[in-house]
Image (cartoon, rainbow, N blue to C red; front, side):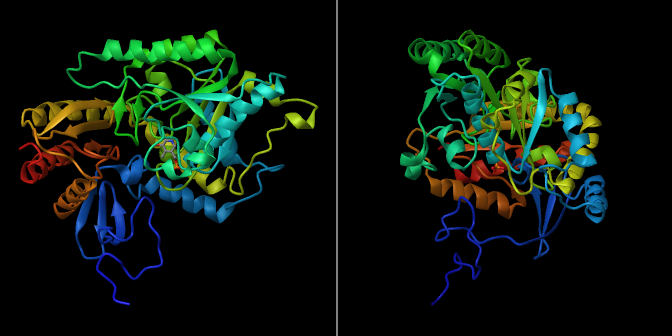
Length: 437
Ligand SMILES: *Cc1c(COP(=O)(O)O)cnc(C)c1O
């Protein structure tokens, strides 16, 4: 059978990709700092931290060294009944960095599992207390929590999970009050979200186990940002009904919002927090769900039925924990840089806004996003996303728009002129593709 250029002769089935229409794959030979080096000799600037995981930069030598040392010493051990120094040190580091009363760390191995664990803990928590009617969950419109069945259930219903709808448990959705520069309706949107929540609480308040949220920044639905104060107001409402609050900080964790965790930036402590992605600096998969002492105590019992029967083969893998410890150490030296990146985003967004090519600009910490401005009779289609990806690729940049949202989420090692060049290229690409006309 004849293969088209879009059907590479490869057994690999790619994620989120219609293989029939996929752009040809670029083959990466190595990576360093913000750059991917391709087999064909080109270099590509990784403006999205390779799906939001690379924290400091590619091939960061301290993390590579920690992984190498750990692999030679203890590569893996069963996590039930056995422990090891990297897991103990990492758990301690995490709870030292997180606000009290978050204090008990459950390890898993990716973001979706960290979310599944949190949802299951919240659900069983009430059962363990003898409360049998708290079986529902609350979530936000536009939220994304991963691709396993539970994580999809707690997310917005979208084109990505529509086909699985019969498998998903119901989740009551509240609008997310996302805001952007020169948005005059931020107050109204927050009021509307809280009113909607009030209505649901009046009807079902005592039937909810928990609410889950991507705090401050919703990633996958287009980097939608809300104001920090909103989270405290939300928490107050939930607390009045005893409903647990789960923060999915899989994307926002480890400095992305400018503070080490969004919960610290928003000064709002959840009952459970989910972390993954940047946790190992982007080298290896690892997930954690950290809960309060109170939740932990509901499982701490003589009755075997109160046990949390959940675990993964690679729970607390020592090499992943060692990578994470090394990444943590680097992160502690990076605080000032996070602020700098935020300032560069602000200046560049202001400059780019003047071009009339983008709108709804927004940023928080190291994250920036904007929508492609469409001319009066222009419609944006998935084909346009492909054109944008390709145009950036040709200029040496890895950018992957979400719909008509272009976002930048760089590794922290990026320097000012590199980031400025990303914005200049956004201007060039959008100018030549003429969406604004
Ligand atoms: C990426 C992501 C997940 C899923 O993590 P995986 O490691 O891809 O399973 C969950 N929640 C949020 C907020 C994410 O951004």
